[in-house]
Image 1 (cartoon, one colour):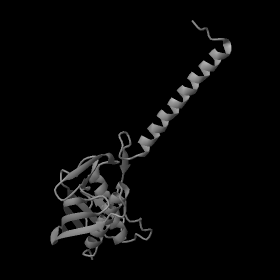
Image 2 (tube, rainbow, N blue to C red):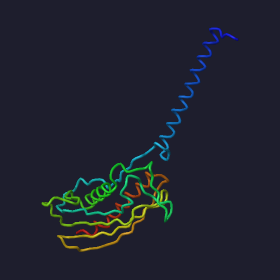
Image 3 (tube, rainbow, N blue to C red):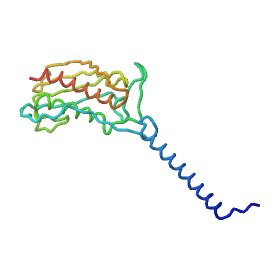
Image 4 (cartoon, rainbow, N blue to C red):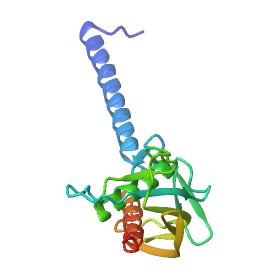
Length: 206
């Protein structure tokens, strides 16, 4: 039996530690790669809809009531919904909304209308009994999805009520391009679609 001398033992121990260090470094690098890849397990990313910037010149006395707003049950979930094609739906576990999608949508519309109509007097349904809107906007979202890297389609029926009297019923179909092959671009396109819808609605408010 061969007995290792002191130098050989020291070299052997160093070799073990070097091997362990290399293995640990490779493992950490692998974890970093996974977390950086938004499509990999454990790499969940969270998103929020954006809106038009607030207007510092909001001096209008116009009062706007936003809602009720209805959305398809398919969309009312944490996962971002997109389409692989016209008949196949995709729910992304690694790309989700930071909060309630319906609340995000209502807030985005409210902020857009506030900016476009230059008023801060906007309340979301249900509002306080003391709030008497000049206009109420009721919206039924029929579709709000698309394909990553292609386009977003927003289909909505909306009603405009003035002083408790319905004055307009419209159906809008809006398509916006997704300027990028990723979910950040997809969500940005959804925000742009809501801006377009907000502009259509605001043009009818006088």
